[in-house]
Amino acid sequence: MDLATEIIVIAEKDIEQALWQSVRDNDNDKALAAYHKSRIKLVSLTNLSEAEERNRNRVLAYCLMRIDDALFSKGDAADAVNRTQEALSLAQRSEDEVQIARCQLTLGARLMNQGKIAEAEEHYRGILTTHMNSEDEDLIQVVGWTLITRGHLLNAKSLHDQALFVLLDAENRLKSIDNFAGIAAANELLVKVYSNLGWSEDAQKCRRMAIKYKEKAKREQR
Image 1 (cartoon, helix red, strand yellow):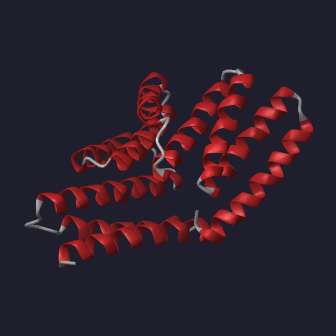
Image 2: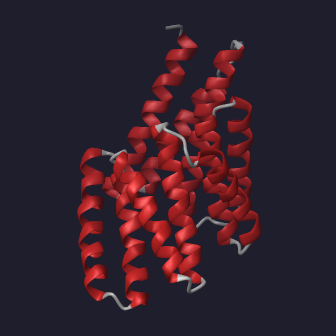
């Protein structure tokens, strides 16, 4: 492994480690410091081969996405769309379909936060149209989280039956890859949907499932 590739591999591991540590400790500032350190290392790489350039852009896109997520969690939403558009641009240059889909999902969420629902839906449709039947675990995860977001929209429109169908689909997909954080998120929203439908026992069951899987996600980093 040459030096550039080693730096890229280490940067990606450091980003992932910082992400899960922030989930456990709820410390976005510490995570941001780690992300920025990795970003500087990645940006500093020069004289890369085409393959190394694509790989660097893939990890850098992921790094910028994580930086945006931490800043957004701290309340810095004003520039979130620009940040995620930059990450998506890098992902597209990397030609990595997983990272492109991840950035599309994040950009859709940021657009939705600004009330640009139609633009957000374009990104969600793109993900689902392209990757709905993918057997790649990373893409199954992105599809699952995209369905959760769609469930949010349907529930907000009082289309509770449709929201339930979409969220159960999301939960099943995420269970198939043991994405515990996603299973927790799906169940948190299912609590609201079941409550809106008046199904209190189902809501209570999902509340317990959400707590269980959120703790499991922290322990197992999935």
